[in-house]
Image 1 (cartoon, rainbow, N blue to C red):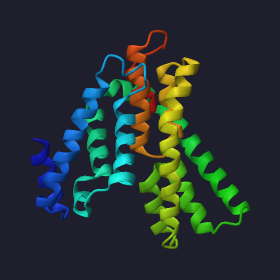
Image 2 (cartoon, rainbow, N blue to C red):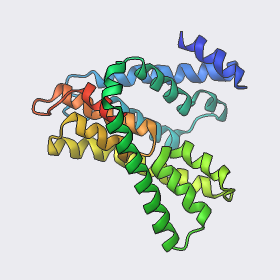
Image 3 (cartoon, rainbow, N blue to C red):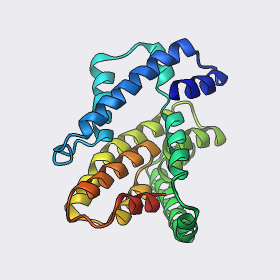
Length: 237
């Protein structure tokens, strides 16, 4: 089903099916194997959560093995994440969104504005170009890679500004995928609190989902962690 849906939609976007289908099958098989490992009864004890295993595997492949350039057709990270967000949203009751709306919007507005201003102020004090500062601000305060690219084009940034911001976002995201669940577990934080922390600390959607899912699985498997994965998902959004 996913091969048909993704192939049809990506063909409209100019991606060749003969390149996408083999690449997607590779990604899909790897995903199934990763979830099999994550289903191991001792996986949670060793913190072998599927998102973390996937991250480690991807880094090993990229840095030690490498893949043909044509396989990039199947590595549509943002595309898959947006589909996942739609499916996740379809599982959230409207009453919960209405109930949490004012608080969530207020929190997100305060965090985004504060983060943007702090990054811009520190960047200017360090002598960075105003356009680079704005690009970094968007990456840190709005939405990681997408925000950096959008703002870089809007402010007329130099060609190297967007890659710099994207690199910072990715490095921060990778560190926080491991840091947030582990520290939250040590502190025995409520899943709702961790969801809010993840939502305001991670710069990238994919990394945020990985960190949130890792702690949500811990809460479902490890006694003593208050809350449940549903509390975490509602707070993260």
